[in-house]
Structure formats: structure tokens, C-alpha cells
Image (tube, rainbow, N blue to C red; front, side, top):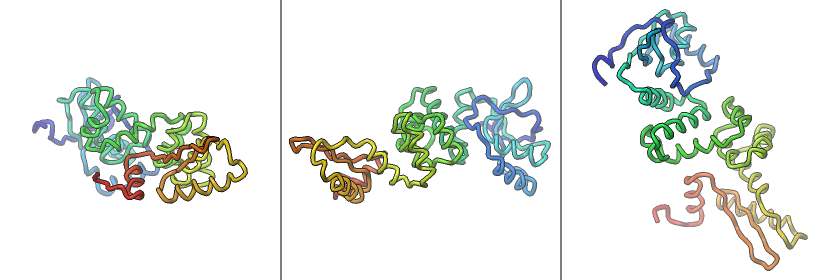
Length: 265
């Protein structure tokens, strides 16, 4: 960054407009008011980032601070003007700042990462390197793009936690709402949700129907043993499958550790 680009200036708040590259779309009113109270007491500690436009200034990073400054009644706000950035660079700057501050909703994060990947034709590994996050972090958020719009809204509003959302994203849209409702009504943990989903997916046994409780109990005990949902399917000739479901590489590592498999093998 050049010295000119890093110089902090004082800019009138009414000359600033949010940029089209902003990844953030939702702002909690209570949190904004809390920040506004802080600004009234101590001012804006960290400058926002802008670029010049014919009508004034376009906001690249710091929209929450700008909105709170308006609520606080400030007429001016400290800012760094970055007229040296391209459209893509401006988007990345705003996205990375929001990710570092953890100020995006899960769905906004997923959409921002998707746009970053599409813009620069990046793999999940490369996206992670660009924003300083792991490949697993990127992949987990990409999974949220499979959510039904109504479920995505519940996630954005905080009714469905991120861990539960990743499980729901693995289901067809017509099943996501059903399980999302169960999460909210019964206050399910992620593990409880995983077990219900595994039970729903489990193929029906084709023999030994007189003792279904024995097989269900065995599945529960195996699930507790490995820490992930286990499903057993059986055939008439005595053959079958034992399936262990996991939703991240970290979960797989946990299963392998419980089975005594060395993590570094």
C-alpha cells in the first residue's frame, strides 16, 4: 500500500454510499446501537476504507462502523481512500475484513467465498490460502449453498446454528425443513440431529424383522463408540453393510482415532 493510500482522512458520512462489492447484507439493530454508544464515547477507532466516485465515496470495508457512526450523530468519519484497487481487489478487501471480524452471517460467508472462487477460478485450497483459512473451513461453508432458501433464512436469523446447518445441507430440500423444525422444537444437539438423519437414511432390514430393537440398539451403541452415526443394512443371505457417516475430515479423524488408527499413518 502506498503512503497516499494509507493516509487517514476525515470524510463526511453523507458523502458515503455502500459499495456493490459488499458481502454483508444484514445488520443487527441492537448490535449497531451498542456500537453507536461506544462511538459516542470514544469515536471511531479504526478507519473505514473508501474509494472515490463522481458522486462521493464508495464504501469498501467498514459498513457497520459507518452505519453506527450515523446513529451516533457523527458528521465525519476517519477513512482510508483506496483509489488504487480494481473491482476484484476491492471485493477481496471487504470480504477478508468481514471474515476476520466474523461479522458475516453463515450464508453471506458462503456466498462471498463462492464469488471469490468464481471470480478467480480458485479451488477450495486456493480460496483458503487467499483468505488465510483452511480448506475444510471453505468446504464447510460451500456446503451451506445447498440449503433450502427457507432453511438458509433460519440460519441467517440464528435459529439454526452453523454445525446443524452443515448436517441439514446434506439432505434433499424437501427433507431439510422437516429436520430444521425438529432442531428448533426439540433443541437437538448436532450429534442428535446426525443420528436422526442416519436413522432416516438407513435401508430397511429385509430379514430378522422380529427383533428390530436389537439392531437399533446395536446401531446406537456403535454410534456412541465411534462418535458418528452408524447404520447397519442386512440382506436375506446374511450379507450386509455397516456404514459410518461423517460430515468433515475432523470427524473422520475422530472416528479413526477411536478405532485405534494412528492419526499420522
